[in-house]
Image (cartoon, rainbow, N blue to C red; front, top):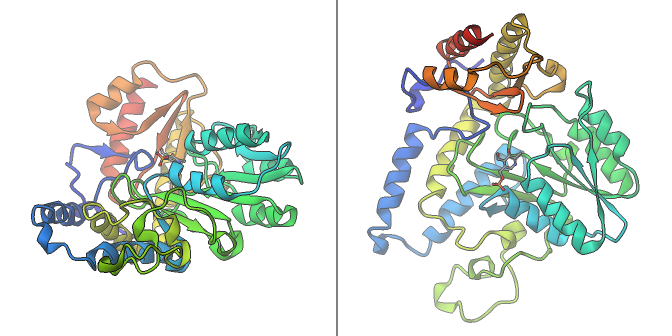
Length: 377
Ligand SMILES: Cc1ncc(COP(=O)(O)O)c(C=O)c1O
């Protein structure tokens, strides 16, 4: 178990921030590094040609370490939708084939596939929410030879409902279906065994569980797709772009590995140093230790909530860092107002409350949440 790390964040004592799934706070050190990074642009003569590569490569390497991959497999992207668009642009899909998604999946991971389906005459197969919370069995039942692409999260963004990506990955390979993973709500807080899942693509924006800034994320590209077509043709993704004097010797070849898929202006001088601090800290804590600590925290919250009559997905069917509390009698009147008054930050989604703590939370935060619940229930 990792002890409370609140001292590393700028969280006032009267704020109970239990909403990492919405957006993580930056580490204080990341904010300081970010201020320096912005200030550098006031002195552009201090930014060298080598700087266009150094931080991008460092961030690529750290994200790869977190994922258990090599830096060669990672592209830098600004959003989940961008990474998903790279996958959509490169995966084979014939008329009449299917793209499998979950009910109430995050929109970036739905609209991408609806559009591709329209272009190719393919259909979307939406797996209904299983009443027993067992998404894995439901997905395996939906997977057959008609499914060309399974576009899935590791856990459902509404309530943390967990998918066994190893079993799903195996089935996808048997069927020769592509597996595209949106790890936005899991990577950094939930271990993923890349060697066993073997996704075709995996995307993860950095501003939630990677403790990074907005607009900086990562795309894993499996070896068989690394010769694919990038969404755009930017100069730095080309071979020998390090040599600024020779950029107009236009090379038809790309930088090695997945770098060809990097978004234009990926050498983001303001954001990369900030993202790097978050990734370094996660690696120092280690994902299994983060996951175990957060799982204990949410289990305790779920247990106390159950005593108040609130429901949640059983612990073995949800991601440990992620909790959705259901109100069987409907959302209590006045709950949003009471939460706001007490400065308790969670997400309200329909008739459920999404509670997503991180290592900066302490017992006092949990007490504040329950103080509010007690007054409205
Ligand atoms: C599951 C999931 N995917 C992706 C995103 C963000 O998508 P994008 O980076 O396309 O804005 C979110 C944001 O809440 C999310 O919950």
